[in-house]
Length: 121
Image 1 (cartoon, rainbow, N blue to C red):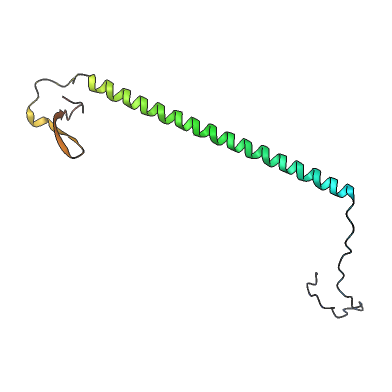
Image 2 (spheres, rainbow, N blue to C red):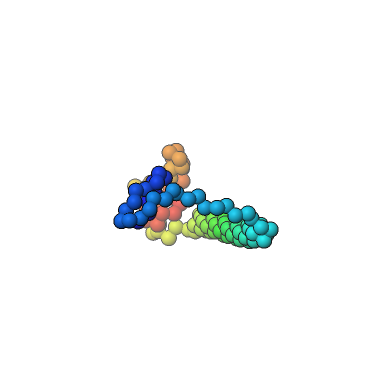
């Protein structure tokens, strides 16, 4: 059991009372300083490598995400352009009741959308 009191403790079971002892500070030699410097240099080098690797991976993930976003945007634009050029395959003529107005931001445009295929007519 560890005694955390700083005052001298009472004798227990025939033990003598001792003052808490402060460990003697030994002088650091040049060898100790050199070892500490080598350890510090190694730790700094490891941290620099880890930071560089993290930064590189973050940049690679960011570049991949940008390419993916650009590809999705380009594919979506191509699909919209191809869809706008397609001709409606619905049976012609359709009664006007089946056509509903095409809305852009709340405004009604003269273009209509077929309720069956969803294309502009």
